Each structure stands twice: as C-alpha cells, then as structure tokens.
Image (cartoon, rainbow, N blue to C red):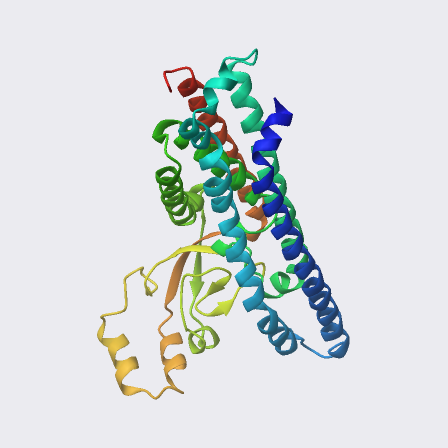
Length: 330
C-alpha cells in the first residue's frame, strides 16, 4: 500500500524536493556569506565602544533577502496543503480509482493511513529542512535585529513550520473527502490557511502565557527617538535589550495614571516648543507608558506551544478524515 501511494504521489514529491534542494543550495551560499560578513564586522569593530552602527549596516544588507525567504517558508505549508493534500483523495474520487483500491484486501482505513502517513511525513520533512537551513542562514541577522517574536520570523524559524506543514496537509486531505472536487478543495484550503496565518499571531499567540506588565518612563532620550510604540523588540522606537514582544501599550500617562494626550500642559509642549526642546519638555512631565510584553526568554515556550497546537489540530482533523471515509463516497 505504501509503494502504491508513493507511485501515485511521487511526481508532487519529486517536484517539491527539487525546489527544496535549489532553495537549500542558495540559502547555504547566502548563509556562508552572512556568517562571514558577521565575523568580519565584529573583527573590524573590535576594541571600539560599540559595534551598533556597523552591525546595523550588516543587518540591513541581508534583511530583505531573509524576509523574502521567510515569506516563502510561510507559503510552503500552504503549498503542501493545496498541491499535496487537496488532490490526494479528490483525484481518486473524481477518477473512480478508489473503488478498485477498496475492493482489494486493504481496508479503507489502511488505505487512508498510508496516504496520510507518507504524505504528512514528507511534508513535515520538507518544511523542517527548509526551516533548518533558513534558521541557520539568518542566525547572525536575527541576533542583531533581536526581534524573533516578529510574526514572519517566528513562523518561519525553528520548529513552528513543522506543525504548520502537518496540519496543512491533513486539512487539505480532509477537506477533499468532504468537498470531493479537486479545484474547490484547493481554494477552500488556501482560504482556511490564510485566515489561520492572520488569526494566530494577532489573536491567539499573544495569550499563550499571561503578558508581563511594566511601566516605562519616557525619558528625554526615549522621547527623542519616539517613532512608534508597540512593536516587536522596541518600545517607543528604542530597541529593548533581549527583544521582548510588546503586545500592548497604553497612551501616555501622568504620575496619577491619567492620559495626558489632551491636557493643556501636553498641548503646550507640542505647540510652543521646537523639535529640539520637545523631548525635554515631555520628559519633565514625569509621563510614562504602561507596557504589556512577552519576555524574550519565552520564545521557545511559544514555539513549543504553537507547534503543539497545530499538531493537535492535525490529529483532530485526521480523526475527522477517518470518520468521513467510513461513509458513502461512491
């Protein structure tokens, strides 16, 4: 049964593995360049007070390429679900070959188990190898930027892509059993996976563990660099050591906890002071921002939680798939 499944599935697998090999070769070359450039940068600025400027230039040089690969890895589970999972059974239902398989000594469940097991394993291997090479290649840049909780980085590094790939494959296969047409199944699978990629980082992921609440005083230095509040690894535009995930920030508050945005004093600072004097004026008001953040040391906890969630979802959807195949499909 496994051999027959491989024969039916080999074209998609070989195409996927071929694409993976090309990407892996390119990433290995790029990774060697990145690691070499990182070592050279540290060597050139050794003995100086700070390497931040040189490291910033180094990170800017490679961040765009790595971001593109990150987005590509986000698309890999979708491709696995759409092009491997969705046609896996619908193709047989449309052509009628499932009747021949089910009239042999192999039961429906054995037939489905072989297809899900082989296809799911290969999908996880493809996503895992891509993630492994990308995580290694981007290591120095990620260390400099220190923003591992950023949605694309979090979802395209380390073990999280394994859970995505397993779930996407099983989801595509199960939807195919219910929809029974290849093209509609591919469309529904795509929509479902896109929705999940939006919902997980914005709605679900921030609440794996209760965020830590801290109060950040707006000093003159911080206010002078106040470009944005509420991002990954930054508070008020100032990078925070350790790269926490700033989940939520309050408006600017005074010492009594009252919002200052519409007070007379704040309006006076904004309207009657030059840009050079504005940071000092705001800092003199003893204002602060309440910040809810996920500390950087929770990164691997979040990786395990998210991978486990998608593994459980894959198991539940697979159970639904086994339940459905018992029904009438002819």
